[in-house]
Image (cartoon, rainbow, N blue to C red):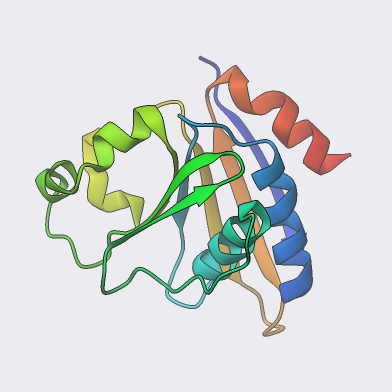
Length: 157
């Protein structure tokens, strides 16, 4: 697999949600998005926008910081939103059933560094960074799997 990379700037929270919705429309079970960045960089805002766009009936989408995992039945299939910030090692993600969910559900994983070697190689990696303007976010996308080529090309068109 050949590594690919692109970057974009999202000038507002609405632009971040719109980007999340466009990515969400292309997702299917077995897709994994690894969301990294500092606290406040926009990971949860992106995830919330993506999840809400796939819900048949709107509902509150809380951050899974304390629950670690929130699951949703969406129009695209089961979706797991995980925040691994409080985990101390990759074995804990196995205990949660997250590695099994990588095969059967759409997974959004915040703080994916906690997965270490368990991070799926074919995942789409999104790294968020705040800009000097408090509403602007920079997002870097990295992927190896050809699965993401068309999805990303559509985002950049």
